[in-house]
Length: 189
Image 1 (tube, rainbow, N blue to C red):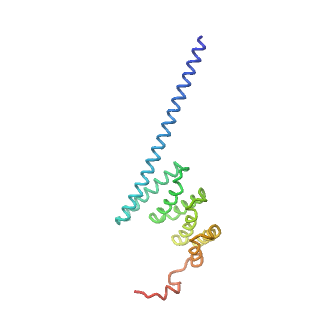
Image 2 (cartoon, one colour):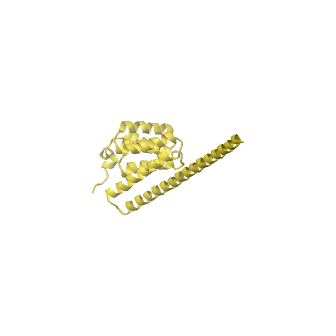
Image 3 (cartoon, rainbow, N blue to C red):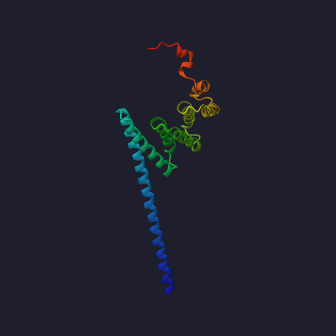
């Protein structure tokens, strides 16, 4: 009889512990979703703020501050929710913020490389590879790296709408505007 009562108590205790554990797991998953939604909202708000201050002609410091904050929030989102469907778009967007607004070209290339590595068949992959070559060539003047990337682009995307630009880049990397005959003949003010 005592053994049966002990077993019943143990069974009830196990059920209570399992219920408590399930409740804790439910609370954790709900708080993660709230955090995910809150982080999405923060990113969207920062994107809107960045757009608004760009249109308003804000000073360079304010633009950099918002861009840096946006970069950090996107990075946080990607690190916390790496399997989320938004990650490829966020990587692409982050690379554009890093290159165009922060002039952090190596970081931009890293973001684009990460996109290519994790999501090789994503719709942004073709443009990402092109932008890596462009960044090496036009922003960093690393023509050797740009050449490697552009040749890889030719192999991977021979029918791309960007292929004529890639071929032009390969033929003319490192040239100055005055090196082009057709530009020399234009009237100057």
